[in-house]
Every structure is written in C-alpha cells, then in structure tokens.
Length: 180
Image 1: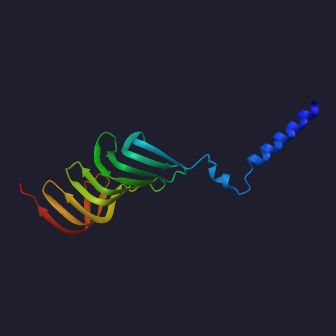
Image 2: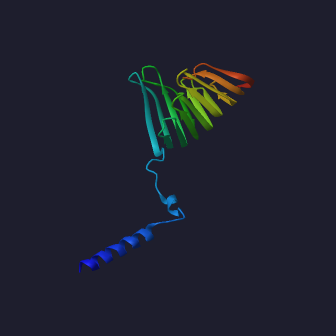
C-alpha cells in the first residue's frame, strides 16, 4: 500500500510540473504588476489650501493622478476657482476641456476652449492658458480675445496676475468698442 502512494505522488508531481511549465515564456504576458503608477478618478472635486485658507477649487470630469507625484491630467472638462488671500471669495475662474498640473513646478496648463473670468466682468477666450501658482501669474502665447463690459480686445499672448484684474496683451491686433 505505501509503495502505491509513493508512485501516485511522483506521478502527480511530474504531471503538475510539466503541465504548468511554459518553455516559450508566453505566460509572462499575463502577469499583473501590483502597481501601474496611475490612478484614474471620475467626477473629481479637489480643494487646495495654503496656510489654512482656501487657495483654489478644482473640478474635473476625470483625472489621472500619477503616483510618482509628478503631475495630474484632467479631461472631460475642468473648472478652477481661484480664491483671494483670505480664502473667502472667488476672484477668478478658469474653465477648459482638459488640462495638466505639474505638481513640482506648481504650474497648471488649461487647454481647449479655455475661458477665464474675473470680478470686473472681463472674459478671456483662448486655446491654451498657463497659471504659475508660485509666481501668482497667468500667461499664454496663444491668440486671445477679451470681452470687457466696454469693448472686445484681440491679440496674441497675454500676461496677467492670478486674479486676472491686471492683464497685458503682448501683441494687440485690435479692439472694438461696444455701444452703451
């Protein structure tokens, strides 16, 4: 009886060993890596704080968060509300189809049908806009159109402060006064 069990054991070990081996290495492609390095989130609602005060509020339809801490990529629409120093009032709003935030550089890039508003009622239209969070400035080299309560301004490139209350079009192409 014991000899029969030994033979059955050897037979099972040899069968399992040959059945589970893959000399071509084809099974390697089915191995799952435990960490892919990117998290995807839907209907994102993030608050950014500085010194205990609200600094900005970001909403996006979807976001890729890279685990190495280098960047966030937003898609399916994004909106960023920028708050005053006390975190009480929204002083500007930027919306776009998609964007990227470089975390190390504290730089937000908004792309695709970018619209930015300030408290004075001015509205900026462009295809690409950068917000440098460290320097507190907003800029672009792309064509811009600005609608103020009094006129339309058209040009290429823009530099502004973070609340868009003071801005300069780098190459002004023209302006159209609106009737009162």
